[in-house]
Image (cartoon, rainbow, N blue to C red):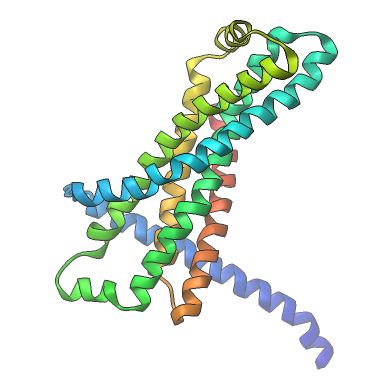
Length: 262
């Protein structure tokens, strides 16, 4: 009998995890439906939206610029190894820009945004949930999704999009600076290589990805923040789950978008 229990315990654990995952996906689907309902008709507090944009976007600019600068520099170093070996310096701008605009830039900025903004949003909503502030809004006949969730979701999508544009510019500028220092390539040659070989579509792919990433981060952080249980311990668990779920959603959506938009 003990042997049978030893075999069934791992299966039971896997089953429990699968059911928990299905429950979380269902909760996010219900939240998405509530968001769509709240947008018809679209009554959004402009003041709350601006407050969230200032908190999520403006305060994130320094860390995103720093991340983007080193991202662009790393791409130049990695591309420069092969460019220097074959003497194809005319492809240096294309190699770095292609990776930054289409893939590395949106991905790294999305993960950074999730760690900073998504976790903070989940912690705020989780704290409001365990202290019954959201129940208080319902008691006052205020719809929490329309009042709390919709401005945060819109702010995250807009913030992610704006931060991506800023990050792309900084990454390309940092890459150009490092190219000049390490490989003694003129700025004009680098940007000619960049604009001659890259198309607007390469930039738009990153923009589309950033919109999906921002929405994924918003949906996961809002879901885990509003479905928290267990008091203060539950708040910490909700933040952890929100960050993990957002990272997973970013990776999966990045894979699917890359297949579709290639």
